[in-house]
Amino acid sequence: MFKLLLIEDDSTLFNEIKERLTQWSYDVYGIQDFSNVTQEFIEIKPDLVIIDIQLPKFDGFHWCRMIRSHSNLPIIFLSSRDHPTDMVMSMQLGADDYIQKPFHFDVLIAKVQAILRRVYNYNTDNPELKTWCGATVDYERNVLTHDMGSIELTKNEIFILKLLIEKKNKIVTREELINSLWDDKRFISDNTLTVNINRLRKKLDEIGLGVFIETKVGQGYMAIEEEAL
Image (cartoon, rainbow, N blue to C red; front, side, top):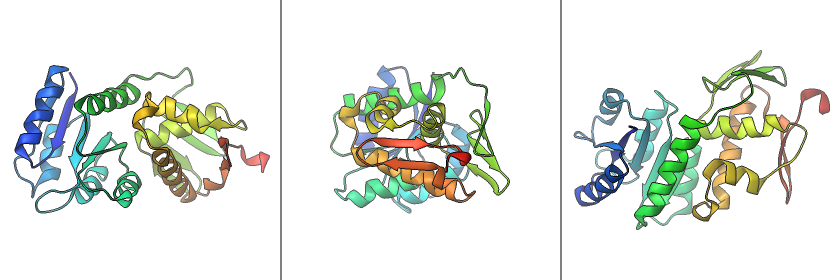
């Protein structure tokens, strides 16, 4: 049974979401003290976090940063605010998805199922360690190690990089990436993929590898080997 942490201060909405998710055999936890979310997160050790942006004490962005300092587990943001910048900020902080309120519960459940399936159930025929452009890619630990240092990636980021490396020097279309990442593209904004790609590139830039992920305008993206430049 997967453990889900639902960080939502609206008790009515919390109970509705918990009831729906419990029907799918998920173990749903809430927050007792909204000034101490990080400690409760550490104690619960969830497999996935669903977090509202508007919370008492500190907003969801703050707690996402705190959670990301401890774990790369999947995070879904909820928001009643109609600001595109909220989605961009969520993705830049390492969220795996973003849902606008009000939403249909079937959409939330579909997203939760897709993320859990992708993060915890996907297998690869490749070894856990792979080399690319002089870096060692550890798919098990979500870490890239290079002479210039090491970086940690989120589940979405490592999955995108894995798909690109598997087809290195070949174009992977945006549609292929979206379908592989989120299963049902009806629930996904095209901008979500762009934000994830940009976030991946920014981290790769820290160890000098961002240039090796190329954008093919109108087509998709391509991971190239260093000698191909």
